Length: 164
Image (cartoon, rainbow, N blue to C red; front, side, top):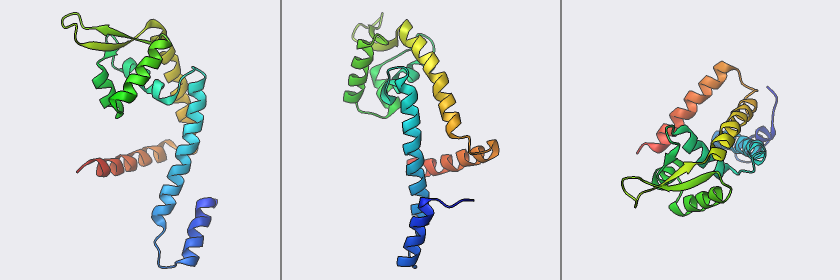
């Protein structure tokens, strides 16, 4: 396999501090660079729909919720792991774009839902298709078997980080 800039960094540390185990740096360095490449490519796709990643996340969460494609703002921000203030800003922006609307519950008018509009439904239904195509293209360097193995390893790592 070819060497990359991360290999050079690790080699430099091995020379300067031979007792240093720089292997975690190799993983995190590559991981960060992969994230940067991915974010750039995904942002390019979102821009085709005049969305940013946060707006896409809200629309996608509503779309995958099924039914009436509506959720309480609390359910949305907990699902997306953001603050209620950030969620309010996203909802306001998407509402101005005509992609979501706030609707009152028929039984309890104090309860408000965020619901996809027809335009929001159509937009996210198309955007999620090109989004997954972009994600797939970012993974072209791996075989299906390698991708499955990497997915399981990342799942294991994430579980260890999120479990007390």
